[in-house]
Image (cartoon, rainbow, N blue to C red; front, side, top):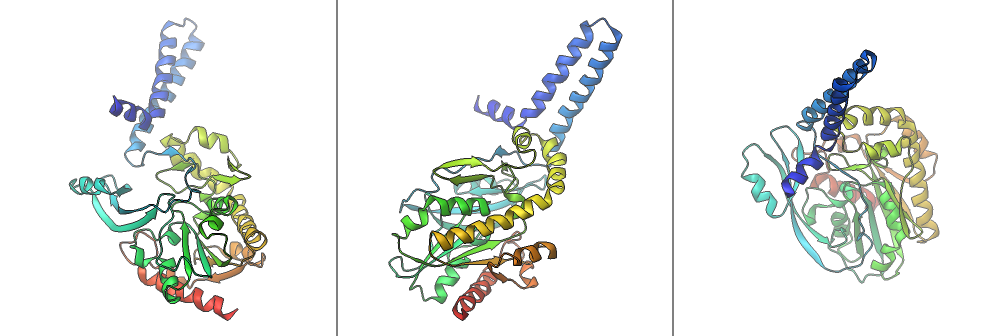
Amino acid sequence: MDRIIEHIVIHEFSYIFLFCSLFFLTNSIFVKRNFLKTIYIILFSIFFAFNIAEFVLYFSMRPVDVESVKNNQFEIDNKKEVIRCARFIDKYKRDFFCFNENIDFELKNDSNKLIAESKYSIFTNGFRQTACNLNAEKTYVFLGCSFTFGEFLNDNETLPYNFSKLLNFESNVLNCGVRGHGTNRTLSILNSGIINRINNNAKVEHFFYSIINDHIRRNFRVTAGDSSSDNWLYKDGKWTRVSQPFGNIKVFFAKSYIFRKIFVDLIEKKYSNFYAYYLIDSLVEIDKIIRDEYNSKLTIIVWPEFTEKFITKLKETNIDLVFLPKDFKKYEKGYYEHPNPKSNEEIAEILYNHINKK
C-alpha cells in the first residue's frame, strides 16, 4: 500500500492530467453537438499529451516535495550523531544524496556512481559541531549554506574548523551553516535568538556569511529535492512564506515536471533583477540585525561568480566584503562544485588576516 501511495505522489500531475483527459474523452463520446465534440477531443489530446510528458520528464528529473520549514532548527539540544553522507549519480544521470545505512544499499546498485562520501557530526537541530573552546570569552559565528556547513567534507575539513584551528581552538566557533538554504534561513536564525541561547548570551566577536550566486534564486524556490530552496522566513515567533511573483502558482504546480522543466526557469529569468535585489536587501537586513541586536560585526565572503552589476550594487551597501579570487571557482574533482579542504584552509586564512587588520 505504501509503495502505491508513493507512486501516486511521485506521478501526481500525471494522474491529474490522465483523469482530465479521460473526462474530456468521455464527454466527447456522449455529446451530440459537433462543435462541443471537437472542443472535448482537443482538450483530451492536450491533457493526454501532458500526461505522457510528465512520465517522460520523470526519467530526467528527481521527484520533489514542496519545501517546508524545519521546526526543530531553533531547539537547543547537546545530543549529536555522526552521519554518513554520500552523493550518487544514477543511470538517468540524476544526482542524489544518501545517508547512513542507505549508502550500502545504493552501493549494491551497479548503475549508481558514487561521487563523494564523508562523515558529519551534527546536533539534532542540524547545526554542525566544530572543534573549539565552548567556554571561551570570544565567539565567532559562521552563517550560510552548504559552503559554510562543509558539504562532502569531514569535520576537520570545513571552513569553521580551519578558522578555529588558526585560533588554536581557544575561541568558541559556531558553524550555523544550513545546507540548501540562503539568506532567508540566516535571517530566521538571527531572528530566533538561537545563537544567543547556544552562546549563553555571551557577546559574539564576529559573524561571517558566505554568499554564492545560487542564493539569488534559492530564496524564491519552493521545492526541496532537486534544487536548493529557502522560501520561508521566521520573524516575530512565526514562519511565513516569502512573497514573490507567481508564488502561489509555483507552490501549486511544484510537483509538476512540466512546470519545473519549462515555466519555473522562465519565471526566474523574467524576475532575475527582483531576486538579485532581494538578496542584497536581505544582506543589509542581516548586517543591521547583527549590529543592532547582537552588537557585533559582519563580514560577507563573496564567491567569484556574480555579475559586475550585482557587485556594484552590493558595494553600495557599505557592508564589510571579502572577495575571493577567481581561482576559488575551480574546485577539486569529486566535490561537486563545493569547496575542497584546501580551499577552506585558504579562505580561513584570508578571514583571519582580514579581521585582524581592522
